[in-house]
Image (cartoon, rainbow, N blue to C red):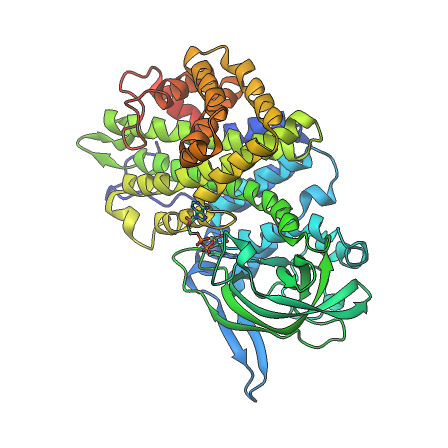
Length: 544
Ligand SMILES: Cc1cc2nc3c(=O)[nH]c(=O)nc-3n(C[C@H](O)[C@H](O)[C@H](O)COP(=O)(O)OP(=O)(O)OC[C@H]3O[C@@H](n4cnc5c(N)ncnc54)[C@H](O)[C@@H]3O)c2cc1C
């Protein structure tokens, strides 16, 4: 509490440190053996929470990007102009390692360090997370073409943000986006119609000319995109399509318009036409979908991390507000019904963070058990964290009462940001079907993951019965299981969260999580049960 304010209006939460005030995150970083990054994370935490950063994040969204298709003399320029605050946020994301840390620093623990930065950045500004995370996910794919990677590696691994619209060779750092989704299909990319015609070979290998469209093409000002297109001979392959051709001319990628989006407004997302745009193949011929699915695993991790960030931001804002707002003779944070809700939110936020940060740590491991966990739990965590963030951010908004619903406060943008993580990089159903695909592809691995869960769940009978139920469901015929894909994935994600809470959270938080989440009376809108012990302590531990 900071004392009651004369007009009972709550001052803005600012100039706080996102890292030092987050015990769950600090423990996750330590578990991931990334304490070497602690001084830098403390610096970042202060930077993200500073008033200057909050204003930049606000301005980047208040003054959205503008498309300029033609020059004054009628030539195509296809330029998107941004407010300077956008570049402030892009530079911050880059400097903080969000575009490349695990590739600049080859320690396995760099993935945990990276996860912490990503989670903090998303709490403050999300649009800049899009080109940043795409760049990071593209690095291993570009590396499939050694000649191309040799040339681009210094710019990909740079910690600078270079916003200039120039040919690759003239840039100090570059960003890369992805072009998969077409009008007729985003989830089912097999329906893509963009064609690639061989066009000889150049310094980066086999060259092609691409003709077609992309219905969603975010961050069109990226220096290149990885694009899915079909050749007559081999079907879908993945191509690196630079914004400028190596000869210094503009690659004909015509931006038709920018999407008028519900949220993520600082970031430009466009529709484009390729008019014989030059592309160079990355990855094996005819294996484009496989290549891009592998890349999507990295962006799905980022969706799980950034949605955990939304939950954390919603929680912290709700705690700050209720600790300073008075109603019916007491602070809101002291009212029993509010405490039940806030404690439930604190548990949800902690469980989302441990799930995402545990997954990030496993991205740095080559242990077969961790690889199996990643295959099953990446789509499950993407599904669950992103889905929970949508309802959670609405609940956090409501904690502010009417003040939550005005654009001048922090909650509107958070609320509008939340659904997109659930839609892009594989929407909800598609993620659940991916979980089932991982099971069908390697059933022994899936049972191995359940063995990992069971070893922990044996401490808690309610949890053990969930693992046993998952095992029984794995035996169902595929056509029966498909209809239950969402239920199965929800159970898997909740069981994994509960096991991780048992291992890494306080006993009281783990017990309250298990008691509520597997109680048939619990629902996301009801909160933990009224008799849950130590509610006040749970809240104090969440945000001191
Ligand atoms: C802001 C924004 C930016 C984006 N940026 C990019 C980008 O840069 N590059 C890019 O390539 N794409 C981008 N996308 C596109 C995004 O990835 C797709 O919208 C997404 O993959 C879903 O594809 P779709 O829109 O065609 O929906 P559809 O594929 O038509 O899916 C519609 C619904 O049906 C469900 N569904 C699909 N298949 C099945 C099934 N077999 N069984 C049950 N349910 C199913 C899905 O879960 C979804 O809920 C962006 C989207 C947004 C909103």
